[in-house]
Each structure stands twice: as C-alpha cells, then as structure tokens.
Image 1 (tube, one colour):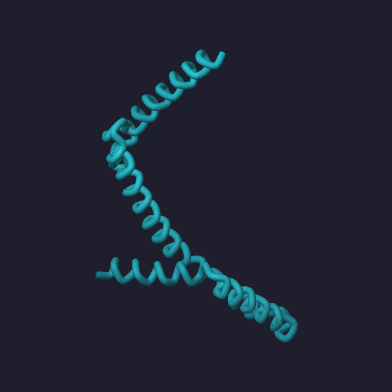
Image 2 (cartoon, rainbow, N blue to C red):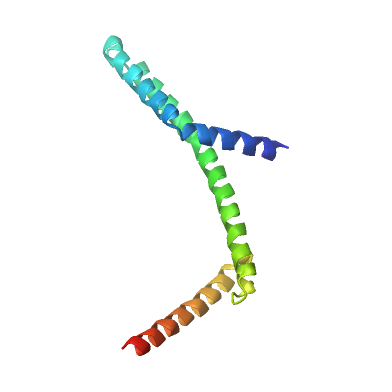
Length: 128
C-alpha cells in the first residue's frame, strides 16, 4: 500500500518539479531570500533559512529521482526483453540478464565482445 501511494505521489511530484513553473517558483524564492539579505544584515539566521531549505529539498528530491529512475529502468528493461524475445535471431539468454550474477554477466560481456571483434575483422576483410 505504501509503495503504491509513494509511486503515485512521486510520479506526480516529479512531473511537477520538472516543469518551468516549479523552476520559476524556485528562482523567485531565491530572489526573495536574497532580497532580505540587506534587511537582515546578512545574518546567520538569514543564511540558515536557505541552507535548511535547500538541504530539505535536496534530501527529498534524492528519493523522488531514485524512484523515477527505478521506474524508467524497469520499463526500459521490459521493452528490451520484449525486443529480444520477438527477434528470432536474438539470444533469449539475454532476457532477464539483470538478475544474473556479476560473474555470469561478465562471461556474457566477454562472449559478445569477442563476437563484435570477429564481426569487425570480417568487415575489414570484406572492405579491405
């Protein structure tokens, strides 16, 4: 339940904070804060306001950005898996590769690097 609520909220908030309006409000807030500097004598309290505000916003944005990144990565992975599955010449071993151990992924990476090298050599021989 909490995950679904967080996912919906983070999707909406991410869309909003990525808008021009959100940037404009943030920029206006900084300008208003800067405008109060001379009136407060650039006091420690004046600095504390912006430091605290930016720290809180940054802390919360880390979680929103990570959630958005996780969603995007998962969606992209499903799309790639479908392309692999639908392509007859593709190696279905690559579907769900993100769940293999690092050693298994490295073995596959070496295998495909070797195939790429072989293909480049064949191309050179044909064009050279």
